[in-house]
Image 1: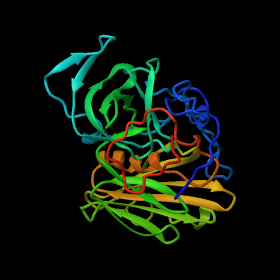
Image 2: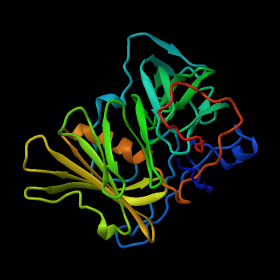
Image 3: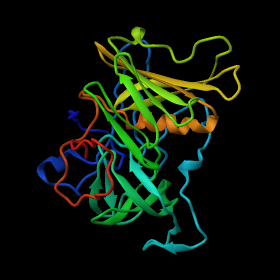
Image 4: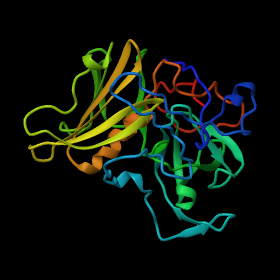
Length: 312
């Protein structure tokens, strides 16, 4: 089970702060920073400086297709919050992807009071959604009801399971199967045999398997992406085979550790699921930010198996 080393961050993200280590949660926002990759793969540092009320995606040269699971199931009934923002009723599970957890707030705004926290992998029940301030989910746990960021970089619709090893941890959609080891490659496979994500570790970037190779494979897009503080390029590919697309990212964790993710999927819209993997990745290196669990109320709900307690 991983216990991550944590550091401070840049302003703008509604995640938990180091002050929670002393039981002083609900007082400040936790921020994520972009850690510069040290080899030739990445020549630019991408700082995560967007707020929970704005898009969590980083600058990109390609537009990612939307997914049907990124928008809450809605009905025609609406209510209003204390700030008169329209709230649409929604239902179903929502899972916290942020490796260091999210604040639970009294309203759909970063200025609203922090009333608790939800750790990495926590599954909450969705009861409402508003597009105010970039999007917020109204969620319900066993002990409290509040709001978390709907930014797809930090939370996702649906229920996820967790994979933990000494090399990395990641969340994957419920119903998917997993097999293998980090060195040979851990394969996460959907119920459809044509869809899979493989995560492999190696001592260097050069030792990682290549995501886009083979006859008829053409790069279709590339974007700078930050996973748990490590910067890399998330690259997408088209192929000559019908309904077969590829994506991948290679991350240099330190001078002797690298991690690569390769994905095969059948529709451009499924790239959102691949990004859920990347957004929930964490490593046993001092690049993520965070601290021990807070002493404030926690939005307990159905949690993923082997859920880590060091997040948040």
